[in-house]
Length: 159
Image 1: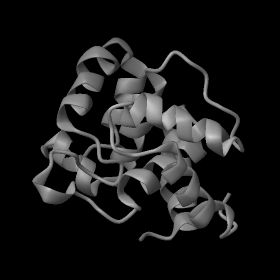
Image 2: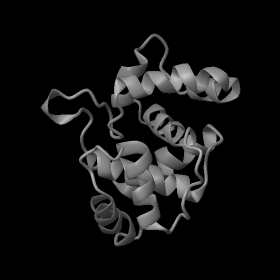
Image 3: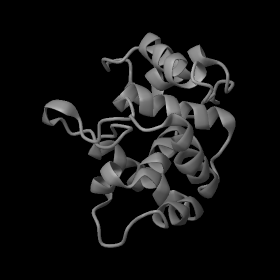
């Protein structure tokens, strides 16, 4: 597992600031998403599944963000494009380009019309993740999200 404090300060926060989409709630939601989706450990979905990167984003979701959200937001699109390594597949970059994967996770949440919960509302963040990232049909649960958040962020002083 990556060090959460370093991941927060060296990847998540500067990436969200760089794309103009930072606030403390978003930072905690993105961190919680990485913990819940991959334990900040897995770069590819187990059992040969399609999900990629520490946020376990599936290629159709990734492509939809580009086609139906970033295509209509040129300033944000340019900021995200600046994170990409030229001439490398964007979907593949979800696996090894942590800043790009982080930006795409945050943008996934930017598409949601409902406001983010308060940054310290762990239950609210967990339910937001479940409803808008994992989906009601997904296997993950808000209780798992909460447990991981408390174990790896709150109890370790990385909140």
